[in-house]
Amino acid sequence: MESKVSGLLHEALSSEAQTAIFLPWIEQSFGPSLPLLTEINQAHVVMLHDTGLLERETASSLLAVVDDLAVAGPAAFTLDASLEDVYFNYEAEVIRRLGQDIGGRLHTARSRNDLQSTLDRMRARQVALSLIDGNLSLRRSLIRQATRYTDCVMPGYTHLQHAQPITYGFYLSAVERGLQRDFDRLLGAFHRLNECPLGAGAMAGTTFPVDRHAVSALLGFSAPVAHALDAVASKDPLLELLCAALFVATTFGRLAQDFYLMSTFEFSTLTLPDSLAITSSIMPQKKNQAVLEFLKGRQSHLLGALVTGFASFRAAPYSHALDSNADSLHWLWQAVDELVETIPVMDQVISRATPNSQRMAKLAGANFSTATDLADLLVQKKGLSFKEAHHITGRVVRLAIDAGLGVADIPPELVSRAAQEATGRDISLSREEIADALDPRAAVERRTNGGGPSGHDMESLLTQSELQLAADVEAHQTIRSSIAHASDQLRTRVAEFHQAAMLTKEI
Image 1 (cartoon, rainbow, N blue to C red):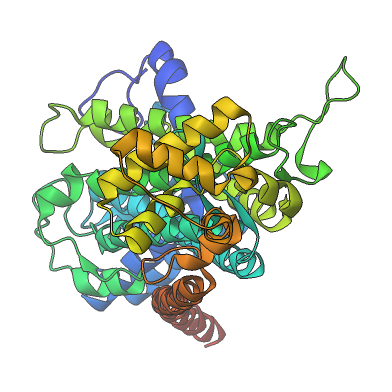
Image 2 (tube, rainbow, N blue to C red):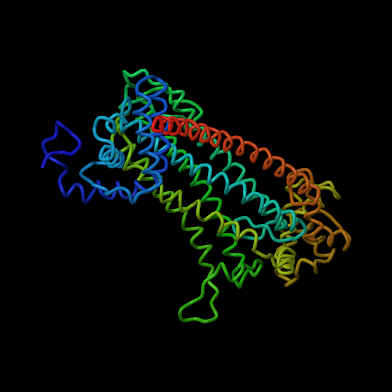
């Protein structure tokens, strides 16, 4: 059996190669590629006509079939692995409907190499915009919840040990700041994706007088990829998007891990709705936070996809090859699509998590998390160096633990004793001074002008977040509007051909 796609090859792809490699690849890619391939073919045909490379009647016939296939969808195609890839399967159906002379002109002045690179960039561009949409939505939710809980005092942790009192709102606003940086990474990846490879041909451009800028504009790209070889050789913009997505998933996973701990019986500082939990098949009392477990686990999917991508590009030739330019993306699409789908779930987690304010306040006042404030007081009130104050306060905590005293029970005599034992100094503080220094709510409010959890600082932090969110929304809307405008322009140009064809028939 001879090849269906080549006059050179005397044999078709082996059935083994078709089954193991080509058919799974084609089936996985065809559905998501078809809408994008429709736009690419429309823009390409319009450009070929405008540059004089296609007569209007031929262009109209091609555009009519492209539209018909878009409406019919994947069901219009019988996928054949012996045709090697998505495009040859598409082209075969165009030729079946229009004949070789007209249908075969669709591929004028392009290669599957620049075509596939354009498909990949357009698909990745959609993912980037979806992730940016989700990022903005989550930041709105975080700002809303942070504003709501600015006075909900809770223990802050370092090394998973009580550190200093903060607030739940302060914690959420920190996560929002992480998502701000994730936005910048996504936006940077989008800008490097948003260049059009069409016109690069197989690797060295084309001898036809194509208008690369025109087809790029019709597809909503900012510009053509300047270098033809680089246009088909490079998938690093897609891997950059994957890196940015991994950062997003990592942010999700870290928040999910904190909520996972906070929702345990031992912590009991946070409650999540039953709709985000599952039960046990044997233990009827169980409320398992499986949603949080999946949100943590999805990070590994993206990491695996990233490792696959970079492993495929390691020592790959700087040109087009299927191991680096196709197989390298095998897990990318599933991983990033899954991440997009988890964003509404993450929004539910953020918006519906309810802090146990009483439990949080109790824990914030326990385990000496305000000890730093006592050391600060010794510096400010008694003129000690912080090193001395640190030693004295550490001794206060040790003596209190040994005596079985809680934070609220520390008397002035114990502080004086600690000062003598640690430094030989005579230090005295009143009971009121000690109580104020060790009060968690007062400790929160003392932290001003350092980006801390006080009401003063939180007002400034949240204002900054609101302003940055507004600027990022505007940048996103500008991008969306630009792509939508290009899509409108493309539809208008295609409609002109359809209308002209109808008028010709009427005449």
